[in-house]
Image (cartoon, rainbow over all chains, first blue to last red; front, side, top):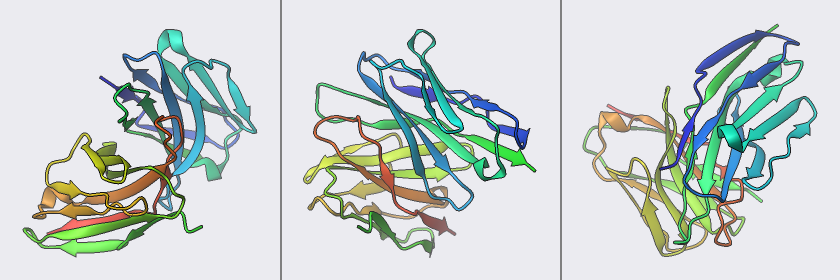
Length: 117
Length: 115
């Protein structure tokens, strides 16, 4: 069955430190998709990145980078030189491409990141 | 585009009351879903739909009903509210084309309290 584990419940860092948020997933399918979302204190959910199971290239977007490793079923998220505005809850999610035509997105429990000034 | 809209933003119910949380999207997305968010539990899928007339259960469907008569609307009905249903509810939508490869767009959420 699908499962997403974010073992880090809460992380606190001082501004300008680098921080990595871990995401480990379980799936039986060979075709699947991974996502990261950000939920700032205001409460909305914001999409950050999508990755399919056939693309293991790491991605960098400004201070954000993502490391996808199929061998360890992990899709980790690193923020470089963290800023107070990065304080939020971050969710990792997984979806599979079934043959039945119906599918679900499964979310991890989230990691609360606190960046202290 | 308004994106995904949810009403109401806040609601207080008494145990046993019923109500409908409204969700609408104007992006012509086939896929829509409802989640509840509780402290320490992340986002848990209640029900989802891959198109008009097609719905299915998620992880925590008990006590909730859904229907999808149009592409735009996906209401969530609480049949007989219980304190355990106190939560923040999010509606989301995404492109589908038969594939779960697209990101979801989320509504602003409904904070529900059942006393």
